[in-house]
Image 1 (tube, rainbow, N blue to C red):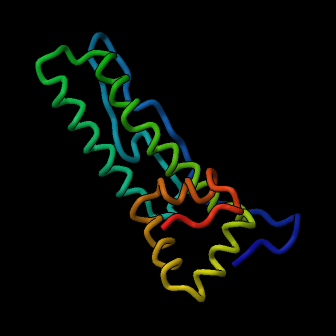
Image 2: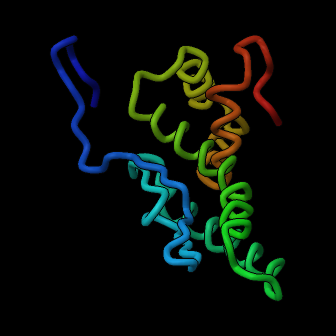
Length: 146
């Protein structure tokens, strides 16, 4: 489907939101992961992937700090670990709710006739940082990464 004129609009049931995934409350560190702090539109199907990634990073962060006080330093490290991935997922997902950039539309057309390109695009859903790079970091004149 597509919007058909300038007066049309897209209304989704989910308002994307990214919150800092930690807070100190009365001297206690409170950490969150998944949809409680990183909520994206479901168009790219990244909810479970993002929650799993955040949980893994939370586990790794807590292992590093197992014998330390769990304070704002721990929360900050967790946020620093997750933020680049969360940014990539969120910006790619938001871009998928807008008209596609020309170079992405061309890439999708190429994928219709080339299985290797189609496979690489399918991997965006496995590793959304690849999708982010394709949408925002690669210039049209650069070849699609192999």
